[in-house]
Length: 374
Ligand SMILES: Cc1cc2nc3c(=O)[nH]c(=O)nc-3n(C[C@H](O)[C@H](O)[C@H](O)COP(=O)(O)OP(=O)(O)OC[C@H]3O[C@@H](n4cnc5c(N)ncnc54)[C@H](O)[C@@H]3O)c2cc1C
Image (tube, rainbow, N blue to C red; front, side, top):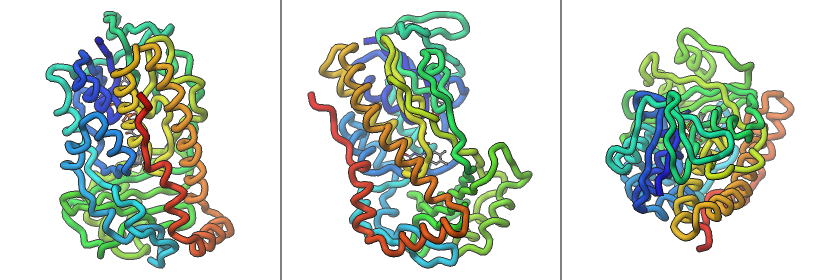
């Protein structure tokens, strides 16, 4: 089959590598001139690795990542450093972390030679015909996969867009310039309307993220200084992580998710994948994991079914699972970002009395991926 993939993000690259390995002819259109990723880290749970293993990419991504975080004490802390809840590592034994750029590099290396077309902004056909146009020139395929991100033009062109929603908070991300001793402790620290997260990377540098409930569209001249001001009096080694991040290397993005999940992930021979289908808040750390699950599901379905039947099964399987995770992620964001002292106080009190095992059970079904029955 000839397959067009629009977007060389994690979702597009994974499905292109999977289908390419199965012998399909793939063309990946990426509007940027470089296939790289933002300078931040990423965590992937066992469900992502289960899906990657099913299409032969698991070991490639394992080699680029580290399981150090799964061996550390992790959970939620207060800004003074008291643990609200501490998850036994047995609950997330397959959690791994990596640099986004390394993941992109590994996936690009797994693509069939010559399949990536950089600097090409591609549009789908409104009726779902498998045709892609770039600067007015049309090319016909057997299948078009739109993996063009949260603000997907393809989703709008297909008439499947139900809008995006500002989640109410902004996020900063950074990677320290050198290793930082985190004393074997990782995870998130929850304050009032603010979160700080610590994730060790394979090379011992620290990927950190921070959030604040605030209006959208704001920027500081020096985002690192903005971090130092907000988190400078939080527990160690938060300030060390911020101070060790090169100036100018702190990223800031307002957080949006899809206002509603599309009524269908497929129209004709065009299908949505990744954030284009189910863009969610980062609170469960599942956006990329779900894009990878989409990619593996579609690849496996196309091994057994003819394309129309595969798309119909993909739509049913993926919409059900991702809608539930998209919703839970949004609810988790509301709880985690609680900024009123009473709301944050109740949240913390409940966390203190929640047995870690029941926290783990709540997320276990999310962290397990099941291959589609053949
Ligand atoms: C702060 C933050 C932290 C996160 N942390 C995690 C985490 O720890 N774990 C996790 O699993 N997820 C995490 N996520 C979510 C994750 O980053 C996304 O879900 C994932 O990157 C989506 O991948 P994608 O391929 O669907 O879309 P994208 O990464 O958005 O890729 C879309 C690509 O399509 C290209 N494109 C767009 N339009 C066109 C066009 N017309 N023609 C050609 N190319 C086009 C874009 O340039 C882009 O390269 C986080 C997100 C945020 C914001």
